[in-house]
Amino acid sequence: MQDYILSCCSTADLSAEHFEKRGIQYVCFHFTLDGKPYEDDLGKSIPFADFYKAMQNGADTRTSQVNEGEYIDYFTPFLEAGKDILHVCLSSGLSGAYNSAALARDTLKEKYPDRKIYVVDSLGASSGYGLLMETLADFRDGGMDIDHLHEWVEAHKLELHHWFFSTDLTFYVKGGRISKAAGWFGTALSICPLLNMDNLGRLIPREKIRTKKKVIARIVEQMKLHAKNGTDYNGKCFISNSACQEDAEEVARLVEAAFPKLNGKVLINSIGTVIGSHTGPGTVALFFWGDERKD
Image 1 (spheres, rainbow, N blue to C red):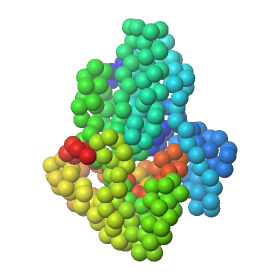
Image 2 (tube, rainbow, N blue to C red):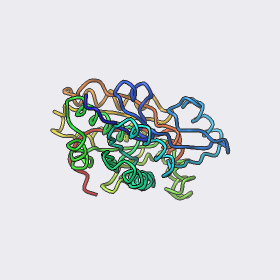
Image 3 (cartoon, rainbow, N blue to C red):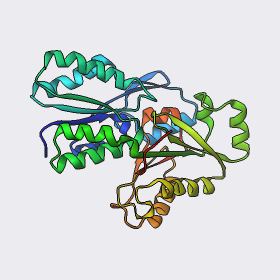
Image 4 (cartoon, rainbow, N blue to C red):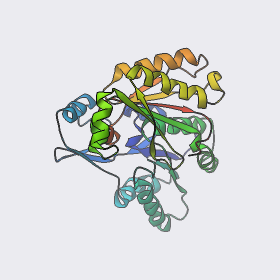
């Protein structure tokens, strides 16, 4: 294993055990639940089931990113220990964390001129961002040095696909992503929006699909259309979900049936408290390597 720090934010939505097993460090975002502050610590402070139940019962949630000072405090012990750092941030299309981390990098490079500090905009989120980190850990463990790893992630990060659907429009209305009228009609007609991440790292609505069964089939169809080597795809596939495990398992079942050469089983994770504060319960997201995202 190469002797540098591979790091990300908690919003990569992998479990603490997974991060530890892969040797990936992480820094926590923040959120409040009915005014009470928490760290986005991967379900330690509040279990995900309790968090989403509180949202369903009307609890108010707000989120905040890691600021420049917190990044300085987070990076400094690694630099003091003589370690170089490659840190990958939540998409700049969703958060200002990348700018904060870049400011921290610039400040610390003056104090530690001999250390390498790379800060990367993932242009991704949730376990898609997590799959990006998983792939970087594979390359690191295979012997890739930090400079080549940085070059690789900048060249290939837009090949990581992020597809989402939701069966509950409540929090898309609350967050202003769709109007109240559209939310009412969508709910009445059982419309489940299908969204993906564009090349600027923004979550974009792509289709309005009636019924959960059809949107589940459609999200798998998008993987068939875009996955590297089509149904011969032999990479890893991650799914995340917000309190709708059965829906996630059905997507995983269909993916495993359609892609027999997958690298292992589909890994199902929970959408964490920061991303989940904006999606609410009822969202499933599918992540895989494919063609380059162009828009």
